[in-house]
Image (cartoon, rainbow, N blue to C red; front, side):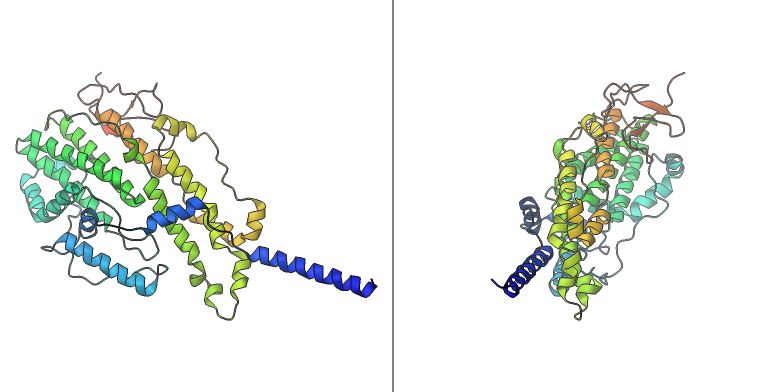
Length: 420
């Protein structure tokens, strides 16, 4: 064989290897089976949910039907999604003036000075409740619905309920309980808040949205604080004990699926939003050199899986887990093949641990709540079973320690000062 032929063969082999290497470098891997399953499950929005419609329309104009408003808003969203796709946020829809909400005159009963302020003017308290009677009715109707399921798809265009309305309604229920207690019906006041607590826990078990899950936790914490404040003020009888959270109530599985799907949708549609993808003069393979959507999605999955699994742990196991360092770093080789994706994965996923901690903090508050009626609670700390609560004089509450900081004092319950 001549030198020319050998040279030509070597050149062809080199070119073939280079072509194969380039093709391999441009190739995006398939989605992991579990990632595909999660996305398919989220994509199946079947059936109906009166609870979803009620929440979605909770702030609809006075005199309207919240569920009908929620249905109409969902139809508008689906029309936008069909015409614009999931990568664009849907603009606000013009509607008549929405339901008026209470302002600064409303406060949490456990907030310093709130109870005394509301009690000193019974006429103003009655007027406040009268002005916002429709919101109270809508909230009560909403809690009675037990079929909650999110009916919108997780994406940049997904419209969200006005969650502030939900929190305002919860505060109003505490005020309503106070009014009942001031009228001498402390049993009805306690029954009102504990009935709400039972219904909120049903919602908590069904919530498949992280924001809603955390707001329900806040509403439950608020209810327990309100009951404790009213009890210590001598306005209601001792409330009935509450069970610790069940695994289903504590689970973040559905919420993590939606959070994963939201990030996955963003990664899949990034080429439609980026300067590179949007410029017809720059070929798509240039973007493929530095960004591979499915590889990026696969890299995010373990973090969501771990949080879904961790939400099955009890508080003590959760506390121990915080001392374990989890290796979720992307390998150097995969970072080289997908540099833009690696950066996006690093910055797009928040630390969900504090959200899970809030559920365990609620369990800690429940443990304190069940000790009402004693001068000093002897409840065991769910995080550290051998530990007992400590007195916080500034907050006028008993509190538990935990593995994470508790700047919002979620592991505390209002209490009378210890004797002596």
